[in-house]
Image (cartoon, rainbow, N blue to C red; front, side):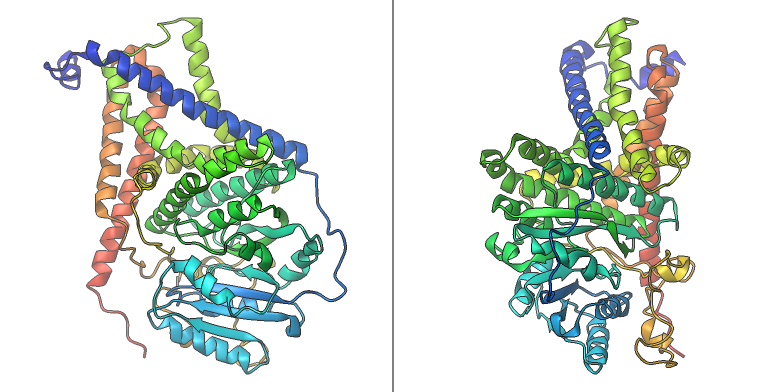
Length: 551
């Protein structure tokens, strides 16, 4: 046993004493930084508890409602194109005050599906416009910027293709704009496939924490929030006065949000107005989405945080803007922290002394600021929706494993942003998963059994069912070229590295206390790495299998 431990120790040519203090200093610094963000998570829960009963009402109501343009940005969304266009065209609002814009950059057959559906609604008197670009310059931001030139509404609602806007969406949001200072209203995302798998349940809880706790805490306490790219309603003047849509970051929504609030516009979050949407049902779609959000947030921080810090705004706005825009950096800190586990165990690092009260207090503080703060944060988000606290507590280890597992993927995104590495806007694939899991109460079906407005006329299911449509599971995985197998291999490598640390901690008495954390890290990296690699394998196998031909 001693011989095996020595094999995992440092090579003879490396003097551990030379590295001891640099490693110890870095280890403590990372613990402190991660702890600060954990402490801030407690602060958000506190602010949420203080303001959760505040329910803003419109100052007055319009006698004649303003004209609204609903924009539906999409790119190769064949699986959901009918669903989103139908839902938008069925929004309950005066027809002479509503314009629908299908903002389509598609390069595949989904463009024809969108045109057909637009023609269908045009024939029924709906003011719906199909806009198609020959290139994707500026990606989503560029598409929205171009489309706004043809918009007739003074208010602009935006829905991504995987969302299903409720029919009452505008009636429940538009009257808040009687306040001339209001620039944007954001509503809460609901999740039509939250119970499909461990992955979708985890994503749902992650997003609930962001919307229910973070948005409510910041907005009601007077700090700034961001538009989440969809399920929101903008005052057109706010977009234009802030400089319009810009595409120098991957989170054009966060970028515009901060520029608009710097220009003096106020934002409002309405958690009781929910807009159902599809969660990425497979790991590589989730990782791609997380990579884009993480990188874009850091790009926005680099671009705008100095301006926010110099602006004549309250200190609480500046503090929350800092934590909001820089919070993705925690993924990089966690990855570096994990990489230090091996040298910390091998060198028997005890920065606070062995058995001292200070050492015990430091260990408990790290546990409280890291693990417990996340637990409290997510339980609070679920209790606010009347979900079981015990049920959420049982899911916390899985949540933390997923969060740790994607840390390497997101750390790479942080590094790319810090180095100024440019990358394309990769849209998250849509699968139309409602066909597999049913719908939540009050959510329209994925594709109506009858064509809207035509009683008794059954839709052509072959026409409305793209190859990517789910049927009890993912029939065909939609490939994401930007997701490299090398990242999966690195994640698996980190998983096996953590297993080595687990083995060392089992045979090093001073490190046994870290065993639960090491197991959690190993589980997270191995789960994300292996499932991601399996998806790559499925894509490879399916690329060699021809698509089924229609009968």
